[in-house]
Image (cartoon, rainbow, N blue to C red; front, side, top):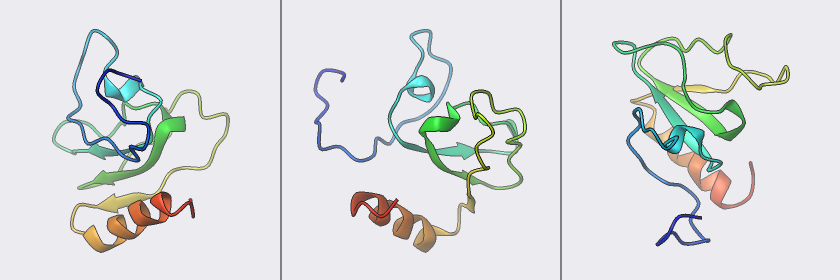
Length: 96
């Protein structure tokens, strides 16, 4: 765990990007990955660490490496804040 992080942390909000050290997209922390259509339709995070995707369009999950045939992740729209809040609370309550 990086210095200053707390073990009781459920979610880390971070801006993605290319980071020579591997960045948060390669971390083992559970995450909601945002996929913006103007940039790409292909996610960059390790699929085993993604709870769901948040996007303004389609998310191409066909090229996800390391999925082992796992089912696709849910895709939420940016405006679906209530559903995202329910998902986050569900994780914190141990339902997911």
